[in-house]
Image 1: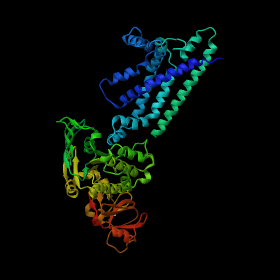
Image 2: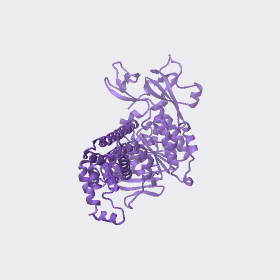
Image 3: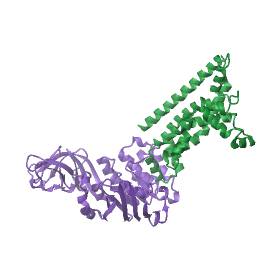
Length: 224
Length: 350
């Protein structure tokens, strides 16, 4: 029984890169939705969360329309030597878009759990908004944010539909664990190799959920 | 000097407040819902008036006409909230340093160690806020507000969440600290008893408007009738019901003998006995004309300003005003058994 190590490494690399990509953006939007009222807030909220409800294949197709070789954005990246569609960056982008709602929602809930009155107290002590975020809001909501990040990482590892449409199923380039499982299951003698990856996928998913639960417990403990 | 003249319409309430405050300890007094906290919040910059102007020592903090609205961070105002609001992720020293580190050293009139010493919080510095009592939290919050080098200190019912012992201790610290540092303070409260002892000036707010301003005793005589609903905050106020026996009324825990002409059968009312009219004795007096002799225990002895008070649990809690010399002469101390002597005619019906 052989383990396809490069596929596992690529999956972890893609999921990790997607997490690094969405962590600042998702945190910002989570904070924005939790703390600020502005025109079009519902629209922004819906736009961030729509990949949760959309079939991932549709998300992948939309990404292909926006960043594919037929679009002006895609052509721009082609010209500067960084094509996106059907590269590992496309796999990262697909995983990021699909997993960002989970992170944004977790950050939003975590920030909402921090009493805004505590932030007002910091304002009265001459602290600016960025200062307040990093010294007060972020430390007080960190368990919730980490919990969301872990869940997003797990979702990114499992991403299939958007990736296969936008990044393709290129061995050694965009073939992550779910795509490799799909390929093996379509081969006559691939079931044994698929089973190993299935087992690994289950372990990663279980660890993500367990870590997420542990972090949520810490949030509840901190609140009590 | 703080000058304020603001208006703000809330969904069910209209606030229109105008007063001036000199560099002294001013109390903003009024019933719940009078608009005290809203006023403080707008002075601090945490909420915005619809119109008007707020200035501090000549600097405009808010002006609807000139379209000026300084952020809370730019107003040089310290704020002590009712619930302390210490940062739960920092220990007390870090909470205090959060304030002091954001003030340039050449603009910091207060030394960290001096404030810590003045408020007697050295032993709390390494502790997390969740491990402090209500009174300790408020002392740290007061220190933190002072270390932000404010030109004005706002105090929003800082005694509200404290028990009676902690209230007296904190009030003592507050008074001494403000006096020692010459820091102007605007103190929001509906607690008449405490404010009478420490405020230089009172602004009285009712239904969102200033109804009076002046020296405490004079102003309180003027506004006293309208303060009836907050009598539970005045010491030695008891809600009593007339007993079937003549001249006797009861709180449910203890009975008082008062002149019968003061009440009718089955009537419920409030009685007040001024703290200065209760006599404290170490032995039970036997041949004495006073009708009310109550056995109790000293819970606390506190100095408030230049006055001394013994807090006595005699079924109900009583505040008894005593002289400093009396404390020494009778060696009064906590948990000491005492007798309270009150003449029937000393009670005042409210």
